[in-house]
Length: 113
Length: 109
Image 1 (cartoon, rainbow over the protein chains, first blue to last red):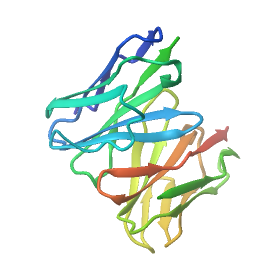
Image 2 (cartoon, one colour):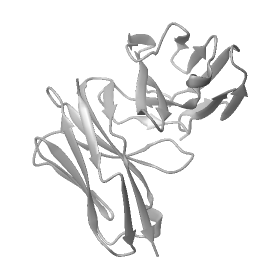
Image 3 (tube, helix red, strand yellow):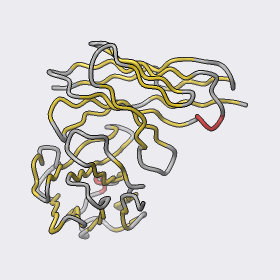
């Protein structure tokens, strides 16, 4: 079975540019999560979708971040405008339901110059 | 606010030298405690879920246990391929997991 697929794997861009990260969850999973991982703050939950509906976005840092899930097989996380402090590894994960173990993609390593 | 503290931050073992990793937590109404393994450049990989105090789960050289305040991940006779960062996460609300900072395990041959 294909796991969670994220793209791109690496992104380097300049401050102020728009960044879009993409995620394809495991087929049949109803819950999707976006996380950010840094050395300073560890793994932080940004937003949680259930059945394509955002349930909890309290972890989204600020209005520059937005996430969408237009259908059950695709989600995006957008940062506009990007700032150097947004540099991190961003993970997407999915699970059967919100309280089941999560399956993670291999992440997008984002560097904002 | 849910809190998870993992110790030690780093652990170096010789191959075959058994040890334990600790995950202490504070949460209002634990629904589940999860252990994950993370290799460099990869996403966390699920290992175990524990739901109630006294529960134990085993997989190969790993055994996870749970009390009302902490969980242990016991590693018996580790091999170099067990080297990774081990993450603990707690969940009180469906969908909202709080992760610890992890323990980085290095097993020397």
